[in-house]
Length: 302
Image (cartoon, rainbow, N blue to C red; front, top):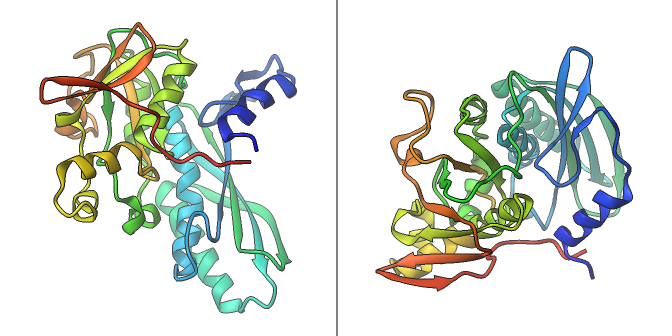
């Protein structure tokens, strides 16, 4: 079976480019030249048994389906405008559950200033699948995964690990942060942390020409849920922060101390969690020792 990232790389060669395609397959969203300016577009599903379990209320499922896509737009520095919604529901689904689902979609869209303008509904004998396509505009440049440079510092916009205790359903996309970061010339690359910090960092470094990175264990912002799941064990909690995934915070590379004052970033987000290296490889520095990291995280087997 093919790994998700291998398939993505193959599809980059399979589908032809176009003169109006500014950023294509392989980033958090595509960017196309259209009308008055560039448009960002992305499409992500949520699937019962994969992204949520049977106990999850459908209103939360609807919110998550929207917010996963909005987090991708945030990583590009885009502002969301329009959403399309495709729903495949199990046969004999009660109308009240469908209304809960659509209410969750509407709630998340409204909070982000976006509107649902169409889609489709089908029934099957399989699990619930909700797919949202999100479209947004770029007030300025697009952030991409491919611009990191050796010597950059690495930062993330929120805490990490333990997301499956509830954060994976209740997170809010960091749209204001992404929009602001795109206006900072010191920011060279960004990515939505959905599959795990280390795996998504590796993806960004590969897109940037095969660079490496060193993370500072003491600087990684570990979510309280990760510490609880680890039973107070600091090493296990850090392992969760590095690889649990579904954090939906922004990871970015920037010129050291290059950000303007102000903006929506917390003081913690301004502190580096690591640095980009010229030589390939991922490393973790902890207690004065340096060890190699393998790409921790979640990858779909296809």
